[in-house]
Each structure stands twice: as C-alpha cells, then as structure tokens.
Image (cartoon, rainbow, N blue to C red):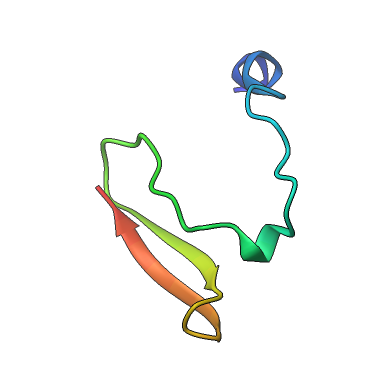
Length: 52
C-alpha cells in the first residue's frame, strides 16, 4: 500500500477552488463503497452515495 501511495501521490493536481465547492465525483472502484461528501447545491452538511 505504501508503494501505491508513493506512486500515485501527486498524480492529480490540487483543486484551485475550495474543497467543499468541488463537484462530487465517482471513483474508478469496481466494488460498492459508501462515500460521503459535502453537497453544496443542497446546502446540507454531508451527503452519502455508494460507488459500484
């Protein structure tokens, strides 16, 4: 896992906007993982989704 982290670290540029203003994006996972994110459009503190 540490090797993976070292390899992938910095692969994506840091967002220029505030982190909480970024759109919610699904990842490339091929399994069901519960994810949580701040939903700025709904003005809620946190929303959840399942990636599959």
